[in-house]
Image (cartoon, rainbow, N blue to C red; front, top):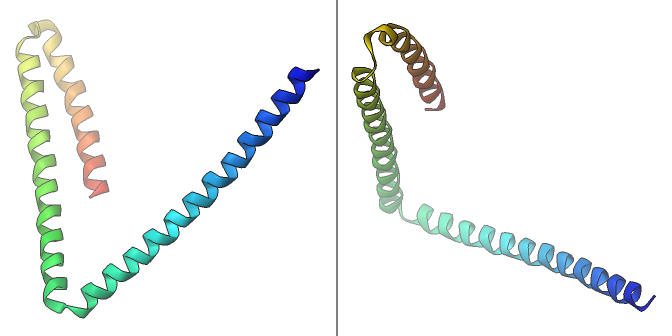
Amino acid sequence: MPEENVESLIKSQLGILHSEDILIEALRDLVRDEVKRYIRQKIEENPALKKEIKEAIGEFVAAKIKEVYALMKLTKCGAELGLAMVPKEMKEKLEKDLASLLEREVSNVIERI
């Protein structure tokens, strides 16, 4: 009987903690929103900075695209190396399967871009 009282007390305290977590999370979101609003305001007040940020974001996106392209090339090289090590009797089937897989994956990447 006393164990049940202790258990229910612990459970009720844990429920309160979850409510506090929700409150803290909501407050963090409010602070985050206010910081975003302040940053946007400062950017709007400075057209040169706004332009520079847009250019930097463009360069960043271009760099990420170049990174993905380099990874695709490395993957292709790895596949070619793997195929070079495969016995001839298996090579043709693997080449077809790999080409199909790469075509599908490249299509997925292009769709995301």
